[in-house]
Length: 119
Image (cartoon, rainbow, N blue to C red):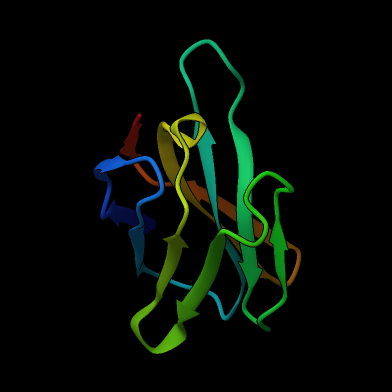
């Protein structure tokens, strides 16, 4: 079993910064992709950023240049540094892990953390 626990959400003003963390625990496979997604009520969950265990990153166009994903493999933790936040970044942010072992794939979601950006 793998669990992902997010932290770091909260209320911030327009233009401010926040750092989200997501720590993985359990039986972890070295080959994995960790990422952040977000969801606003009434809308589909959307990709924010992902990072492979090899360090390859992918960002949504809406956050490129403002958000940075990073990971500390020794702590099984992935981070999302969010700068120049805008009200439209307000959402519940979810951590997701895809873990690969041979032909096996395990997908796990965290419980989510709320980020609110005020005007």
